[in-house]
Length: 147
Image 1: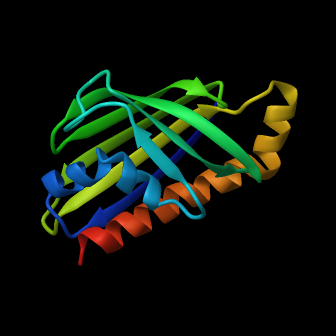
Image 2: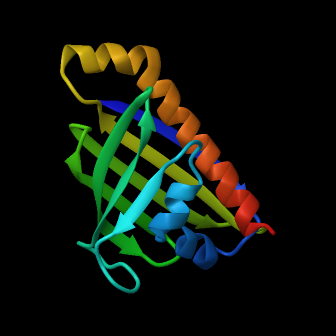
Image 3: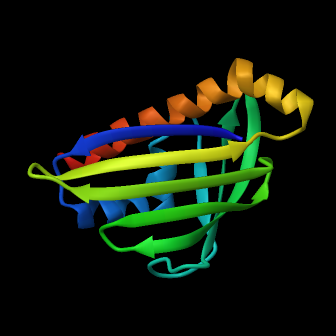
């Protein structure tokens, strides 16, 4: 299992950051390249709601179905992979109120596709792409929310 973590501070209230994070289209638009999201629910998400996300990882088209497993407004969002190309995926985002806004601590834990080949690809390409997605997604979120 690979674990990635990135932290940043955004000059915006935690509630505004939370609203951004729970919007799958905004979530997907923050990643580099052509990443798309398609929701399978109506209105604001609740625990158990799912959406599909697809894009390029490690030079390969990848798809994943994510489920909102824990939602605490202004504090925490947890997504779990429930289908798709990764063997497992978990995204935990913690929001901490600060004097200037919100500290975002996001952790991705995943197991790449395939067995031995997946571990090799993770070491040489997938991990690097996933780290880039995490950091670039945060940079885009910060830029959008601080406007």
